[in-house]
Amino acid sequence: MDPHLLRTFVSVAHCGSFSDAAHQLGSTQSAVSQQIATLEADLRTPLLTRRPVTLTTAGARLLEHAGPLLRRLDAARADVERPAGPAAVRLALGASP
Image (cartoon, rainbow, N blue to C red):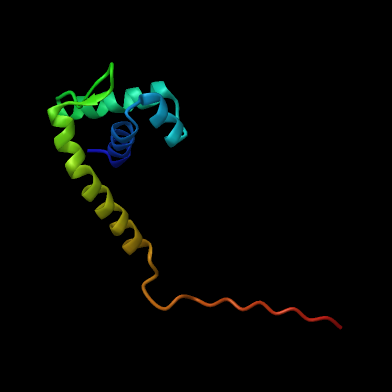
């Protein structure tokens, strides 16, 4: 399950609209729609009804898992990117004659 697709799904679920989610994500409505279709194909089940946009039963179950999954991924990234030792200190000096 691609985290990018999962973030897109969460945005559509919270916005209740593909267009609003696209605006929030800085994307296009068609790109968001394609990403949701890709996620649905990966999971082999519909996650949203299209008109009006509502969660299916499977979509509601996925949304329950999505928040904790995305928070764990963010925490893992932050932990890996954190410097191992003390932060390097850079000192810059300037002088004039």
